[in-house]
Length: 211
Image (cartoon, rainbow, N blue to C red; front, side, top):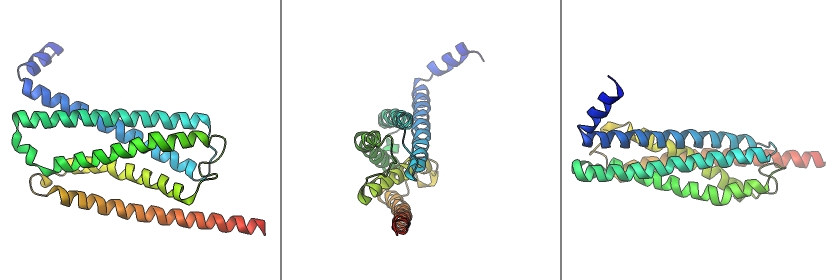
């Protein structure tokens, strides 16, 4: 089958073509956002542990964050596109609460991304030449950890939910979001305990050096 045959096959069924285009760009948005977010989180974690920040590192952080933003925009455009498609062709699917749970999680991701762009990235620029935690309060350190955990859990959330067909039309949105919240709280708790233990150990080490 050549390209002409493919084009004719798609144009003969515009409904299917619309669905296929939405799926392709939705997958691209998810792949871009998830891949760049995981890379950004891992890189920040390395510098969080005490490496000196360079301008090149901050430029990479901003590039990854921009890719995440592109991924999120694609998810919103295709997500709204799917809602329009379902309204026009398969209205029954609008009663599938799994869809709305995914939309809520993507909204949380978007808010987290805006905060990272407006607050954390500018702060990292100010830290160039020093370590990420140099001169930072414990509250700010916990905020950094929280944003990273929120990004990690929330990017995998829609991916996992989308691949659980037995949730369709059976599990209410509030229950899906409840499980998401439980997982988020659990990971938050572990991460913050680790941060507190690390900070305490570093504080004790500094005291021992002074004595």
